[in-house]
Image (cartoon, rainbow, N blue to C red; front, side, top):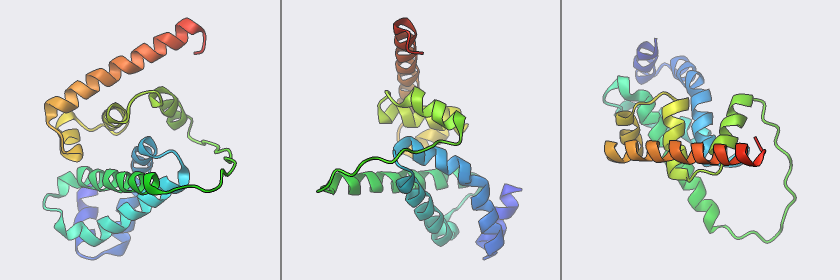
Length: 172
């Protein structure tokens, strides 16, 4: 089904493209949320990704790599937002408004992965939440597969250490 939607979208079928993006929306949200802390930035990254996918879909050579291609675009958009934010200087300290997470699973993953460095968090999220294998993750992140495997192993170790520390301290 995905293959058919991609072919139709490449031929200019706007409805097929919209359906294709709708199928990817939850996946894009999870990946963007792993990088970005606020929902407005997540929405911007997802929106920019959809626009770029629409504009560049013809450049996708192999349709079977659509999700890998789209995820790489999304991660680059997230990095652009983080870089732009780091250059901003805030003159006011605005009070934070509480964000209510409706997806408990996403909230749980956010709590588990919060203390883990970004490079490990991204690999863990792509592997466990999005179901990418190490080869696909290496393509998405432009890393050697051996680097992805070692980050996956170290990330697991860090999550385990953090979890057992919280259990020991009575926080979990």
